[in-house]
Image 1 (cartoon, helix red, strand yellow):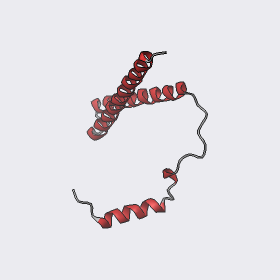
Image 2: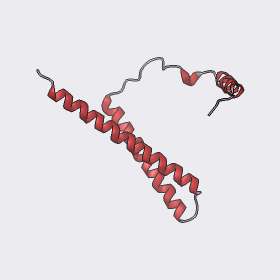
Image 3: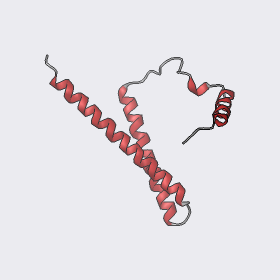
Length: 102
């Protein structure tokens, strides 16, 4: 797929007009623990699943568009896959630490 240079220039110009605020790093890190971070991610994952369930229930009664349901379910699936992958890597790292000689 070829990218039209004019389209790329227009997109860059629009992004520059936004001020680039989203592209800068935060000034100072927030004081939070790893447990709080994991808890927030878990809460976000559960919320994604609940949103997918709610959209599915609305579709059953005819209140939601099929595209909205598919989007919500896909988002929940991607979130679950991400959580499982992170969990697997954390367990793998923990096992590697246990194998280290003291």
